[in-house]
Amino acid sequence: MARVLYTLLFTLSLPLVLARIWWRGRRAPAYRERVPERLGFAPATGFSARPIWIHAVSVGETLAIAPLVQRLLETYPQRPVLITTMTPTGAERVRALFGERVSHRYCPWDLPGFWSRFLRRTDPLLCVVVETELWPNMLHACSGRGIAVLLANARMSARSARGYARFAALTRPMLQQLSLVAAQSHADGERLLRLGLPESRLRVTGSIKFDIEPDPADIGAGAALRVQLGETRPVLIAASTHEGEDELLLRVWQRLRLDWPGLALILVPRHPERFASVAALARRYSDAVCRRSAADTPSGDTEVYIGDTLGEMMQLYAAADVAFVGGSFSGTGGHNPLEPAALAKPVLMGPDTFNFAQITQALSEAGGLLQVADEAGLRRVLHELIGNAERRGAMARAASRFVADNRGALDRLQRLVEDRLSAAEAGQRS
Figure (tube, rainbow, N blue to C red):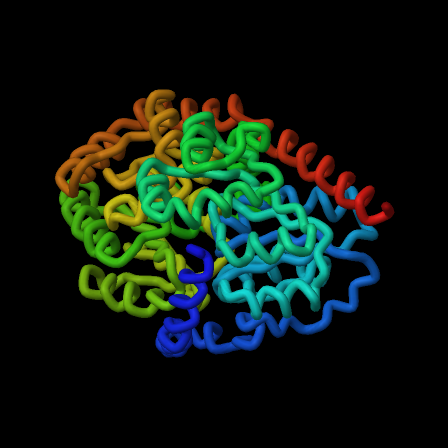
C-alpha cells in the first residue's frame, strides 16, 4: 500500500520533475538530452548475452566503482556491462573511462511502467547499485523479474538513516528485496539492519574508495602544472566546492596572501554549471585568473587557477601542497577526502562531513586530516600549515599510510559480485 501511494505521488509530481530537468538544462544543456531514456525507452543494446548492470548515480559513484568495472571487463570479456547514471556528468565520466567497452543509459525515473520498459529492453542478469541509490519501484521491478540486486560500497549515515526511518513502510520492504549488501563499515551495516535489512544478507567489506591507485600519468601532469605555477611558491587547492564555499576560500586566500604574497589557489567547483560564475567571482579577488577549460597557460604570475574541467581532479590535487575538500561548509556532507590522502596531501575539511563520517574521523585520528569549525579556524590552520613544512610532511605521510593500511575492500567486493553472478548464471541455465 505504501508503494502504491508513493507511486501515485511520484506520478503526480512528474510534471515538476520534467520542469526541473528543463530548468537545469538552461545552464547544463546535457540535462535536456536523451530524456526518453528517463521514461524507460532505453535504446536497444544489441547485446549477445544478458549484461551486468551497474547503477552509479553520478560522478563520485562512477569513479568509486570504476576499478570493479575494469576487473569485470577483464574477467568476463564475453559478458556485456551496462552502466546507468542519473546525471550528465556521470555519463561523461563513463564515456571518458570506458569508451565503447561499456554501454551507458540514463536511469529511468522510479515509476513501474518506466522500469518495465527499461528491464524488457536491457534484460540484465545482475544489478550492482553503488552506495545508497535505492528506489522502491526499481527494486520491486527487479524482484519481479528475478534479477538479483547487490548494494555495493553501501553507506548509511545517521542522518540518512533517520530519513529512511520516517518512511519505514517503504524502506523495510525495499531493503528486504536486496540480495546482498556490501557495507563500508559496521556502523553502516548496523543502521541498515535496524531499518529492516535481513542480517543474513549483510557483509561488511570496507570502502572501495581506499583502493584508489593514483595514475602515474595524473601525478606527472600535476607535477608539470606545479612547474608552470612555480615550484617554490605555496599552492592551496579547494576541491569540489559548492555555492558559498568558493567565496569563503577566496576570502581566506586573500588574507593569507598578506603573509605569503606568492600563495596560489586552485579552485575546483563541484558542478559544471557553476564554472563560469565561479570564474567571474574569482576575478573580483584577482586580476590574474586562469581557466583550465580555456587552455590558459598558468605561470608564476597566476594567482587563481580555475579547475573547470571534468575528470582531472587527481592531476589538480597532485599540483598542490595542501588540500581543502569541499561540500564540508555547505551542509551537503562533504566529499571524498581519500583522493588527496592517496596522493599524500594534508587534508582540511569543514564541519559538515556526514557523507564520510567514519572515514573523516579515522583519517583525522591517523593524523592526515584536520577538521575546522568555521572560516576563522580554516584561516588559522592554513596559516600554520603553509608556514610549517615539517607539519605538512607529517600529515602527508600519515594520510598516505592511512589509505595504504585500509586497502582490500575491492577484492572482497569483487568476490561477492562474482558469487552472485555465478548464481545468476546457474539459475539462467536451469
